[in-house]
Length: 355
Image 1 (cartoon, one colour):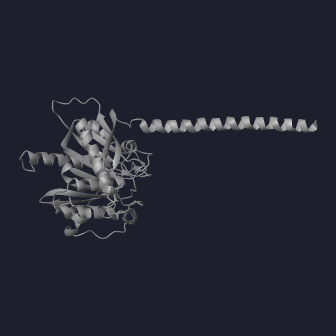
Image 2 (tube, one colour):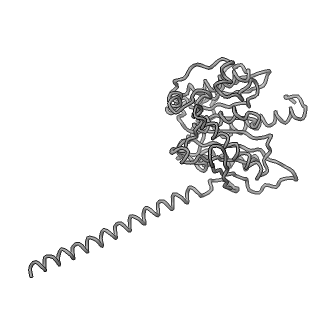
Image 3 (cartoon, rainbow, N blue to C red):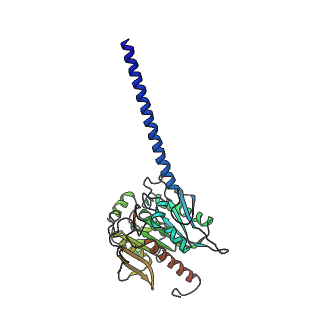
């Protein structure tokens, strides 16, 4: 009788513990499911900006890549009118939405009437969401670049894009991929902006990429070596103008990459550096500007920002890789691109560049 009573006590205790464990497990499952649901909703939620956040997917040699195109609200286009396109390449650990929120490029697009294309890296292609700009030896970088060009072409067919006014901008790995795209397809872009990226031609594999990020690369290459390092398309004077922005306090990508990027690009297009000048607006970080010119035209601009780390200069507060204390890189990028659009339009019309 005692034995039966003891067994009964154990059975009831086990049942109570099982119910408690089940309750806790179900509660945790609901909590985790809720967290996943909220994270997914946040990822899919359009970034700030008055306009449409339009998704798409493109196929290419590097597989499939998604993208989002921002179209400003209230556009009233004239018959046949096409708009400029700013192509944005996010950095590691970011998505297109993150990059849009940080840079606030969409707000500027509303005011200036242009479209913005945010290319999205697939986590299957890189676990940290980095672009494979450095995998030149394996051919993976060029395949990915071709896939991104397929996405740009697709967006240009679906939306009113002026193919003569397309510019590139990227942060970190996105900056390096932007440079690769510009060297592989130079005729497709009027301007390219590298923010906190590795110098073009400085890496051909993951091992050399890490070294280049730390600043372990050779001095600027002579003209004869530039084309070989950057790709066969890097022919003298055919590359689009480049804006290089980098923080002098960047602990992720060494600031020496900015100097090398500007020097390599300037060598390729035959531009010579002018005297550096320092500017500071209000309490924002000071910046040192160096312009590289050929025949009176600025083809490369190097912007070195004091006190800026590995972050988009002038970006939205409280976001990763975004520093509101820096000068407004978004405005600088667009102003640089718009100047190249204007120059190209004058040349096409047969007008003097300074007219």
